[in-house]
Image 1 (cartoon, rainbow, N blue to C red):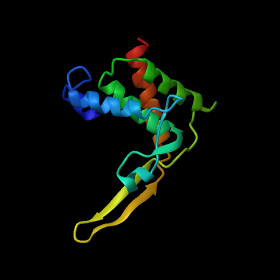
Image 2 (cartoon, one colour; image 1 turned 90 degrees about the horizontal axis):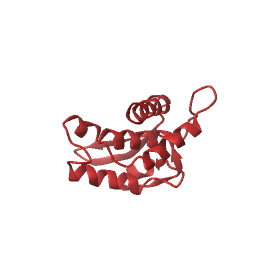
Image 3 (cartoon, rainbow, N blue to C red; image 1 turned 60 degrees about the vertical axis):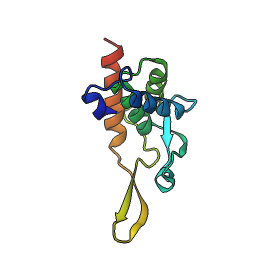
Image 4 (tube, rainbow, N blue to C red; image 1 turned 60 degrees about the horizontal axis):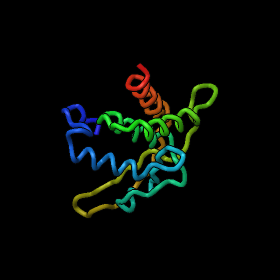
Length: 140
């Protein structure tokens, strides 16, 4: 959605963006965050993580804000989740696995459905980015 917003698509003018926002919002957890399990790569369908994750939450929030989703409440709830998990020293703890790579060999097909990878800086980069975008959009 970030890329589409850069070519002028938004919640207001794009049925595809509205559908993507509806999908994301249908996955928001009761605590205001999002959490997708690495198992989604194995099943090719959304699989909720047992609890929300700050990285997944930041990704969802960045997408919603990029396309100018008009309702503030779900975005505010996600921001509150990210802020509630921030430690007193400013960092966020490592949570679930953030990345999965699918290896594919075109001659023989998929030979390894997944390879789980932790990206320890994602929790900093994407949380700070989401907080900054929120601040720029709502706290002027």
